[in-house]
Figure 1 (cartoon, rainbow, N blue to C red):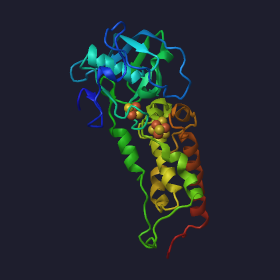
Figure 2: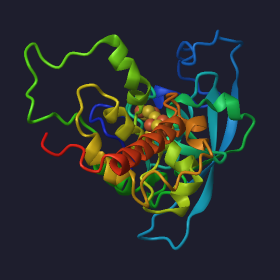
Figure 3: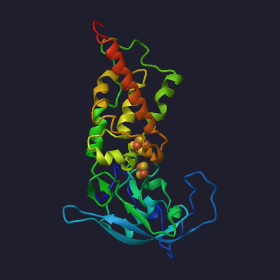
Figure 4: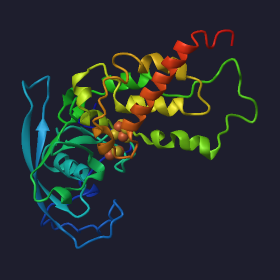
Length: 292
Ligand code: SF4
Ligand code: FES
């Protein structure tokens, strides 16, 4: 992993990407349109103190906050500000990013205690500061703002997040088509970008270490609702075990923080309903499926 860890090989960062030092004599770039679509207001800017959590577990006993004074203007995102720190003040500062447009899900941080994407959060909303930037809660830190992805990846793998075909009934020509109505059934759940903000917001993820968590359950429901999929029966035991869907107490924080409006809390409730239904069907028709 490089010190500014990003997934896209061409997605490098430079000071010219977002911010310029206040009072810099270099030519100032034209203000970019606001990414949130709001009409551009009067230009604002100044400096802000970023309090960034630093931690290199291989060298340091405990995390600590380091202050950086950073220039900002109207369009400076939090990710831009971190990049400016890395380019100008502290090259060893480590964080993940790639797309800079709320698509790759790499740049999740705790901003003043709330899980947010750095690339779609703006410094202007935290002025005059200070702005505290920490790694996503409920995850082990690998270095500075980079957390260990493996437990999350294991949850994703467990729910088999792909279309499982029916080997006994091959898809006839012209292929596995869907109507718009069939796609609507799972469309919202397919918007997940795996940013893990919902894991950082969920109190149960912190308590029940084997909880699949909001995004993994949502993906299971997404594929269970896909008309092309035949994997619901094999996902059922994964969902319906101690760490599957049952640790969820419907706090709903996952849906509140989700930057894509996926609503994982609703998906988990649907999974609970479907699991109870499957259990009832098994109870009433214990030999269902035999001889198929
Ligand atoms: S459900 Fe939302 S918050 Fe959770 S990983 Fe997917 S996009 Fe991120
Ligand atoms: S950099 Fe891709 S989501 Fe922020």
